[in-house]
Length: 173
Ligand SMILES: Cc1cc2nc3c(=O)[nH]c(=O)nc-3n(C[C@H](O)[C@H](O)[C@H](O)COP(=O)(O)O)c2cc1C
Image (cartoon, rainbow, N blue to C red; front, side, top):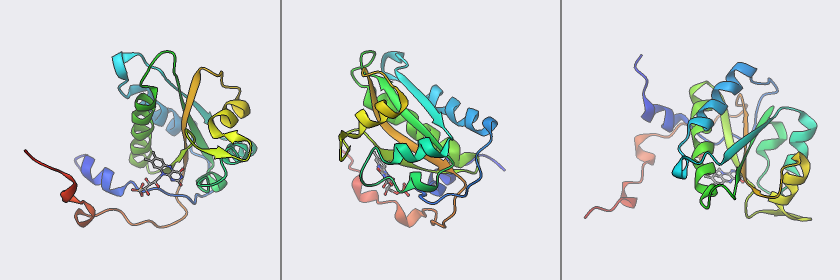
């Protein structure tokens, strides 16, 4: 069957409950390669990733933020998306595109995911970004955007249909 990009984008939904089974190294490689292919401003390649599949570390990452992290509770794999803020003044944009590319590639490979925001978020100790940097020993100059929780879905979330596309948000002329 011909590859259908629109179908892939309609199928991708945020999933927050995962099966235990870890994605294979081969699949993870394919997903991070999509992130590495994502465009960056001035082609500065400011974005980096840490793949985490150790359960204790994933749960430590979950605690870096007080709310909104339920997807990390069961995720067998998490990809931390961060970028060198000294390399790029638009590292947030660079990292966002990379994260989105990886979410779409994950869907393409039969996995589900959810974006867990860390930038501009907090836990009881303060900034979630600082907390993630502390847990993973990421140097200060890197901004931490988000963590992509990843795995096989263990909940049923309906794909989007044509009816979900709100065309009134597009303006012409
Ligand atoms: C910038 C951004 C931040 C998000 N942060 C979180 C988050 O912290 N926790 C979470 O569970 N989902 C988060 N999401 C997922 C959104 O809630 C989700 O994409 C939205 O509700 C639409 O649902 P869909 O992804 O199934 O289309 C985030 C998504 C984006 C793009």
